[in-house]
Amino acid sequence: MSNFELLNPAQHSDLKVITERSADYGDAVNYVMTFPFEFRNIQHCYPIFFQKDATSSAFFPIALLGFEQNENLFLDNPGWNAPYVPLMIRRQPFLIGYQTDANDPNQRNPMVSIDMDNPRVNETDGEALFLEHGGTSDFLQQATESLELIHQAHEHSAKFMAKLAELELLEAFSMTVKLNNGSENQLLGFYTLNEEKVQNLSGDVLSQLNQQGFLQPLFMVIASHSCVSDLVERKNKQVA
Image (tube, rainbow, N blue to C red; front, top):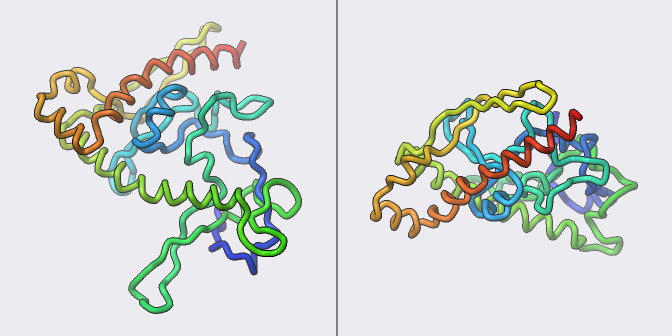
């Protein structure tokens, strides 16, 4: 369970955050939400697919990290074994919270909140959030900037996904991964691009996608699928 509190120096002056990557700190997940603005970095390391929100039925992009639940094939003894760590992993244990404006009860202002039950949060080890004599640390400032980026990215991502749905470019798929030891993993519940439909898009539609900032992310998704073979190789090494 999460226990988010709006961050403030009076209440949280002694808090520190452990930044190392480990299953002990919640990094053992087989996929994580990503955003079109980071697809260029993501596609070098991780396959990009899509999921559908069970409540809203809206699609959202994900970076695939493993084939089984709670399996992150990029975690090893030194930490995270990839040159780029997805932003939604790096932002932990912070999240954007909201506080009612004192001058306008109808206005809610975004604020930095922290999950007090996250195992990274403590008062002895890691990066300090506040300076001894007042002010925020560089670490907290960077975390705040990341949250602002995520906040802005959600709207662009929603528009990107709506456009893919409008053009009927998404399709459900399943994948059976056969390993060297004879075992199999089956990937279910995800969506991908219909590459044939993408290739048949008209020039006018491609131009429109480009003007909206959607064309490059679209092709980054397709390029990312070459990373599936790397995931399989990592899985083979793990079970060997």
